Structures are given as C-alpha cells and as structure tokens.
Image (cartoon, rainbow, N blue to C red; front, side, top):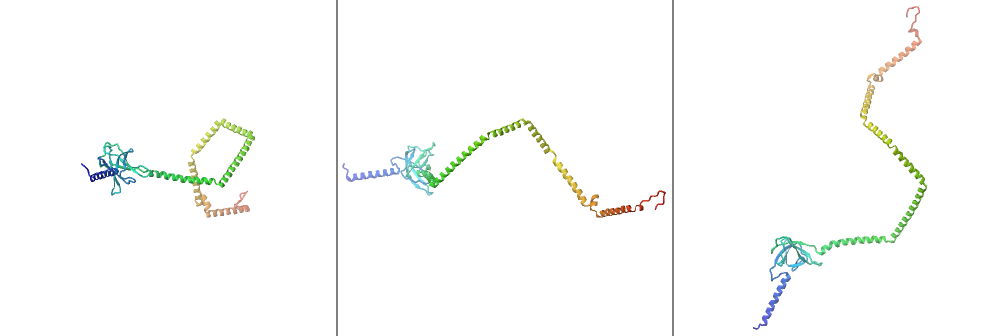
Length: 314
C-alpha cells in the first residue's frame, strides 16, 4: 500500500504538534505521561520564582512549579507537581530559596517528621528565605561603616604626619629628655644627701626604736592608765548630771522669785527698799536722834542730875 505524500505530511505535522505539546508541558513542569501529586503553598512575595522552577529536597529535584496565582489578599498561591513516588509528610515546609546571585528562586522542601503524608491537593506550610543579596546587604553596610572609620583614621594619621606636628613632637620629646636629666640630677643630689646624713638618720632611727621599746616596756602601765581613764569617763558619764542641773535651775528659780518679791515690795526687805514713807521715817528718826545726841553733849545737865546729899530733883 502506497502512502501518499499528503498523508506523510499530515503524520509529520501531527508528530511535531505532539512533540511541541509535550515539550511545552515539560517546560511548564507538567508530565502528561504520568499522574503527579499537586501541592500548594501561599507566599507574600515570590521574587524570582516562575513556572517550571524546580522543587528540591536536599538538592535533588522531585518536581516542578506548575502555576502561580495572585489571590485577592495579595498573596501568591504557588502550585507544585511532585512525582508520586516521593512521599511528602504532612508537616513539610515549602521554603522559597535563592539559587544564585542573580535572584533565581527554587522551592526547597524541608521534609517534616510526621507519619501522616500529604495528599494530592494539600496546602503546605510556606517559608521565605532571604536571598543572597539581602544577606549581603548588612555585611555591606558594616563594611561601609568600617571603610568610613578607616578613612577617618587615615585622615588622623595624615594630620600626625604633618611637618608642624612632627616638630612639636620633637620638641615634646626633647622636653621629656630634659626632664629626665633633671630628675636624674635630683636623684643624685638626694643620694648624696642621704649618704652624708646617714649617721643622723641612724641616730633618728635608733631614737625611734628606743621610744618604741619604751612604749613596749611600759605597755602595762599605759594600759592601766587608759583603763583608769576609761573608768573615770564612764563614772562621769553615768553620774546624774540631769538632777544636778535641775536642782541648780530650781535654786535659780527660787532666787529669781525672791528678787521679784523684793522688787515688788513684799516682805521686810521689800518694804525697806520700796516704801518711801518708812525710808522718810527712818531718815527723820535718824535726824532727831542725831540732834538729841548733839544736845546731850552740849547740855548734859538737862538730862542727867547728880545729887550727893539727896537734893531735890528738878
């Protein structure tokens, strides 16, 4: 049976279309010749992830990303197709991970330890790992900070290497050397003084040793004196000062009361000091007595009569 050219062209065209479909699905991650398990995961961002990206376990590919769908809440639902011969535990985490510095992403399954296996259509837990550039950025910032500080240090070193500064440093070192020389000369003078005054120093130390020996010999007497002094101070501190002070205050109060009575004209002394009439009477009596004494001296016969023979009295 002879096959026409048209039939051959049709068969070749059908084969080409079939190969194209198979290749297209393969690139999309779909295997049209075998049944694959479909799993899902939700991510907030999927930078660098696209269809046909591999699904890996410890670097070994077990499937591919088959579809990405934007959800109403702005999350991205990612569909995986995994070869059914690989068992995926229920608590497996689908981690979005960078595969190179260009930002390409892949899905890495961190297989869990659950005995329950994920079934076709299950949604796995999702996790996003920082890409290499995001990890490098903190290091880059630290490196930039270190470079800035190094630049500041180099600027300081440049200032130190300034000729004027070097001259000042030389002057400072010269001053330090001169100070050390003066210190050395002073120490020599001190050594000479100590050498010449060694005899006096020995005598002073001997006297100090003698004094300390005397203190040691009279330690018991000194202790006894201190004990007696402590006893006296204790007795003085224990004496009734308060009662003595109270008695003194009471005596002063009584004396003040007596003085107040005298000032107020109470009592004999008060009347004597404050009664003008009594003072005038005493003054008048004293004046009369004085006149009487004068008159008695001048005219004694008026007051005293002597009669030897019993004459009549007048």
